[in-house]
Length: 451
Ligand code: SF4
Image (spheres, rainbow, N blue to C red):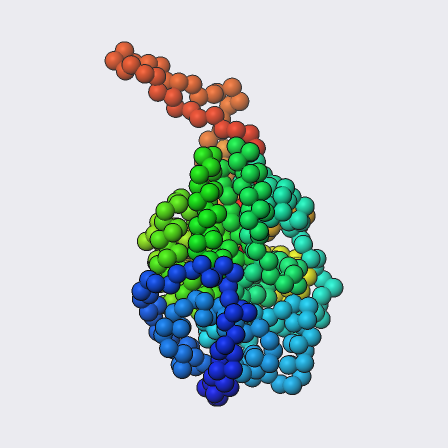
C-alpha cells in the first residue's frame, strides 16, 4: 500500500527533469557546488518515493528546490486523494499555493490522513472553509517598515526581509498573505537602503535576517549582505530565521557553513514541530551549523492534531536536545486567516508546559508564548505555581502538586545596598549592589518571521 505511488512519482520526475531553469533557486547560478558532501544518512521514508533518485541528486539542495511539488496533480503521484479531495485542494491552492520539497514529502505516511507531517505541508479544505476567522496580518508587520524590507520596531534590533520565497509553504504560516505575490528577492538598491538605515542608527545592535526564507538565496548572495552587515561596528549579533534544517536540510552544506563561520556571532532559529522531523539528515545539518560556531535554537508552533500533547512535545524537545538544538519557544499559533483549523485553545499550551515541567530536564522545556495581535509583542504564559502569599511567606506547589512554604525575605524601602566599607588592606571598595532598571528591556523578538 505504501509503495503504490512510487511508479507515478518516478514518472513525475522523469517528466519534469528538464525544468531546472524556470525553478532555479534565486541567485543559485552563483553557487559553486565543488565541495564533497557527506551522505547525510539514509532514511526508510526516502525509499518509499525516491529510491530511484541517486545520492548525488538527493544530497543536492538545488535538485530538491527545483523539484518541489507545487500542484495538486503532482501531489496525487505521491498521496492518494479522491477526486473530491483533489477538487477541493485545487480550490484551496488558488488562494493558498502549495509547495513541498521532495525531502519533506518523503517524511509523510501517505496512508495516514492524520499524519502530522502531512498536515503541515498538504493543504486542507478548512483553509478556505474557515477563512472568515482570523486576519491577514495579525502582528501588523507592515506598519513598522522603515524602508522596504526593513522592520524597526524596537530600539536595538531590526528585521531584514530579503525574500518572500520559502522551500515549503507551511500551512500554519503567519505570512500566508504574502504567498500570492509570486516570489521576490530584494534588489541591490533595496538592500543598500536597508544597510544605510542600519549604519545611520547606532542603537541597532541586533539584526534578524528572515523572510520568506533567507537561505533560499545563494550562499554568495547571502555572504555579500552578511559581510557588509559585519562591517557595521555597532551591529553585535546577526540572527537567521530559517526552516531549511527541517524541510530541506541538504541546504546546510559545507559551503554555507564555511561562509557563516567567518561572520560570527551568528545565531540561527529554526522550527521543528514534531519528533518525526528530527531525522538523520536534519541532525547532520544542525551538527554542521554547530561545528561552524552557529548556535541553533528551535521555535515551534503549537498545532492542533500535530503536536498538541505533552507526549509529543516531550518527545520533540528531548529529540532536539539529542541533536544539540535548544527548545526555545513554543508559540501559540497566530490568529491568521486560513489557519483556524490548526489553532488550539491557549489552555492546551499551558497544560503541555505544565505536564513537561519537572518531568523532564528544564533545558527541554520551551517557553510558551502568545505573540499578541496588533504588534503587542510576545508574552510568556504559564501555570501559576504560587498559590498564596502572606507576609513573609509564599505557598508554592511543585510539579507533583505538593505544597511548600517558602520564606520570602522582605526588603525595607530605605535599605539600599551600598558599597562595602573598605578594609584597611583592601585597596578598592567592592560593590555588592547592582541597580536594576525599572521596566526592564522590551522584547523585540516578535519581529522574527516564523522560519
Ligand atoms: S512558516 Fe516560515 S518557512 Fe514556513 S512558509 Fe512561513 S515563513 Fe516560510
